[in-house]
Length: 198
Image (cartoon, rainbow, N blue to C red; front, top):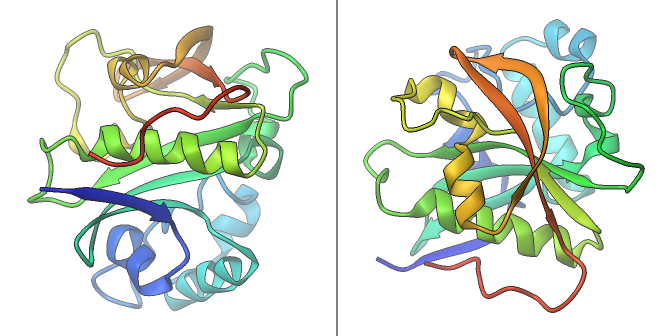
């Protein structure tokens, strides 16, 4: 299997990964950390998908992994200043660099365990680098090998980020599914990495 990671620009492909099976269902659409909670909580059903379509007109919302023409994975990537992590008291700011954040990884059922999350992290690194980000942060679970509920694994796992070259930059006071979250960071200045495909 050859996985290609591309910027997330096609609405139907984004919808396949983070949208609902029923158009009127009020699923996350990966908006929870992207927009203020008051705006996020006020939107219902099809309004949420329409909002994502509008955001896509302004540019990619992250990256998608493709197996051929089929979208099989998603990673949300954006400047931290444009997300709720800009003001999140549980996730510290390490310094004043205008870092980007990678906060959600999702792989479609039936495609897990094939290295797609690793390809998504590599693709997110390259995407953020191409956008001029000086560094990329993530806030994964430090599960220390313990089993993680798939519905709560969207933040990613520390070991996967370490494998991609991220380093532990700070502890956080955020806990998800009983596991502490840590702030991981990778510097993006310098020569490009070989990544984004697997």
